[in-house]
Length: 580
Image (cartoon, rainbow, N blue to C red; front, side, top):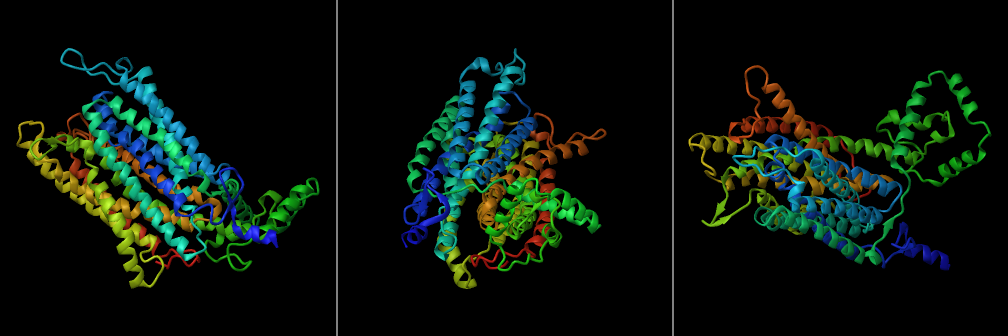
C-alpha cells in the first residue's frame, strides 16, 4: 500500500536535481517555470546585445564591407540557432535539460570573455584607418580570436536555446487541461521574456556600445550571462527533470533502415535465410533484451495496429527484421511518423526567418544612413531599431494570453482557442506584408538620397524603417510561440527537446537562406556589364528595393506551400488541440 501511494506521488520519468524521483506537489509547476522565464531575460539580453549591433562592429572596427559584415552576422546567428539541435539532442539522449543549460552557459561565458578582451585591447584589433592609413580588414590571429569568441558564444547559445524552453515546458502536467493551459501561458510569456531581454539589449546596451565603447557592451553581456547561472541554480529544488531516454536519432534511423530493408526484400526466402543467420543463438542476451523492450513499451496508438499515415514506414514491423538490433516496436514506429509529419511545417517557416534576418543586416545599415534624431536632440543608435517590434511583442503577448485566447476559446468552444498552425499562418502573412513595406520604404529612401548630394545623414527619419520592424516583429510573435508549443506538444516525449529545437533551427536555416539568396542575387545580377544589386561599400548604390520585392514574392509562394501542409495536418489525439 505504501509503495502504491509513493508511486502515485511521483512524476513518472522525472527526477529532481539530485537525481532522485521528482514528487508531485514539490517539483514542477509555474513556480519552477518562473525561474526559467527570468533566466531567459538574462540569456537573450546577453546574446542579442551584441548580435543586433554586430554588423556595425564588423564594418567599423574590423573593417569588413557591408555585404561581408551582413553575411558574417547571418552566419553567426544561423550557427547559434542551428546548434540548438545539438542541445536538444543531448537533452533527449544523454543529459537532462538542467545540465545542458549549465554547460552551455559556461561555454557562452568563455566566448564573451574572449570578445571583451579583444574589444578592450587595441593591439588585438585592426589599426584605425584615416586619410594616411588605409583600412585593412581583420586577418590572421586577430581574425582567429574574433571568430573563436563568436563561435564559442554560438555554441553556448545553441545549447541554451535547445534546452531552456523545453526545461520550462516540462514543468507542467500535460495530462490535465489546467496543466496544458499553464504550458500554453508559459510559452507565450517565454516569448515575452525573450522580448524583455531584447528590449534592454537594443536600447541600453547598444547605446553603451555606440557611446562608451564595445568593450563595455561585451562586458555587460558577460556579466549578464554569468548572473543567469546562479539565478537558474536557485530554482534547482523546484525543477522536475525528464530522464533522458536514449538517442532519438537511433530510433529514427532504426525505423528507416528496417522499413527500407523490408521493402527491398522482395524474395522472402532469401530474406528468411538472412534472418536465420543473423538470429542465431550466439547472443541470446541481446535478443532477450529486445523482446523485453518490445513487451514493456506500450504503443502510441490505442491498438496494436499501426496507423495508416506514412504507410511506407509500416514495413519496419511487417516482417521479421534481418537482425535483432532492427526490431522496432509500434511505439517507435508511431514516434518516427510524428517527427516526419511535423517536418514540412518546420520547412515552411524557414522563408519567414530569412525575412527576419534582414532586421539584423540591411535594415540596420539603411537606418544608419537616415536621420536617427528624436525630439530634436536625442539620437537613437540604428541598432536600437528592433525596439519597435520588441515593444509591440511585450504589449501583445499579455493581451494575446489574457484577452484574445480566452475569447477565442469561448467562440470556438475549444481548449486551444487559436490552433498552433493558425498562429504560424498569421505570422507568414505578416512577413509578406513586411517585405512589401520594406521595398516601398527603400524606394522612398533611394529617391531622397538621389536628390541630397550625398548628405549624411539623409533628410528622412529612421522611423520609416520602423514599419517593417513592426510587421516582422508581430510575425515573429505569432510564429515563434506557435512553433515552440507546436513542436513541444506534437513531438513524442522521447524526442521532445530535439523536436522543439527545430523552432530555432528554422531561424538558423532562415539566416543561411538569406546569405544564399544574397549570393545568388549578386551572382545573377552581376553578369555582363551590370553591377550586382547588393555589392559595394555604399548602400545608396544598391538595388535593395528589388531584393525586398523578391523576398516578398518568395514569401507569398512559401505561404501557399504552407497552406498545402497545414490543411492536411492532423493533431495528436491528446484533447489539447482541435484540428486545424
